[in-house]
Image (cartoon, rainbow, N blue to C red; front, side, top):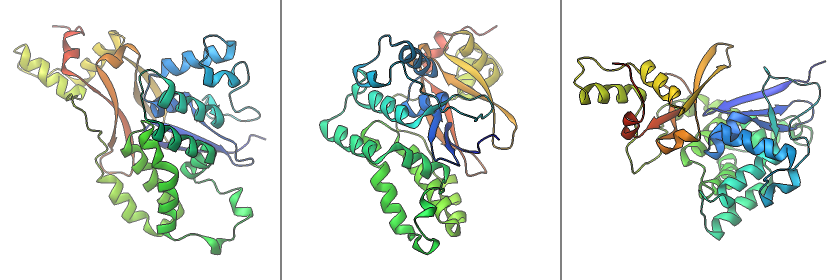
Length: 296
């Protein structure tokens, strides 16, 4: 009998929990987005871990061991990376990677969070209550202020670890909606109106706007379509297309930023129009238009 998997997606990040055991993990693409790096970077790291080659010092305890949730489980072929390795990789990109420099205070805050357990965080994201329900009665449900205080304690240190603040706020709203369904309508409206766009010193634009900019620059009477821009970005090796299934089983297209694309592109979070969803999108520096080829 196939084990039941609880799945929740937030901002393009997939979280999984096994109903029977509480074991948890994240998808490879979700972990990449949570770390703010290209999926190919995570894939390369996992390959190096599997063979014990070029492994960062802090990740050496995981070298050569099975890092996927195993057993009689499957979720549409997704590789589910165990939560303890997820925590270690997130910590590496937050503190050890040369691209991320943080203070000792921020390191202490994050390691305190990690000690509390990333599994508890994923349980919060997936709404899993299988283990805690056996030791707590329904009457012990905390009020919304207590729940918010707990979420603040768990998640706020991640802002110092390089995780986008608006992703954390979105996660809080989703968790509160699960724990306090009586506030669900209010929380849904709050999240829908939350513009999840990180501040950026350099203005970055969507493929739609890039198409308009390209047409104006080259004297075209009509904007270049977003599809054409995305195709050009893909052909230049700056992004990769991934077809996934949403919660309703519908196939959707998700663009993933490559390591080469990080020169021009950056992943942001935006609130989807008309629903309580958060989307992961790529926004581009205008200079990318000079680095891609668009058919005349």
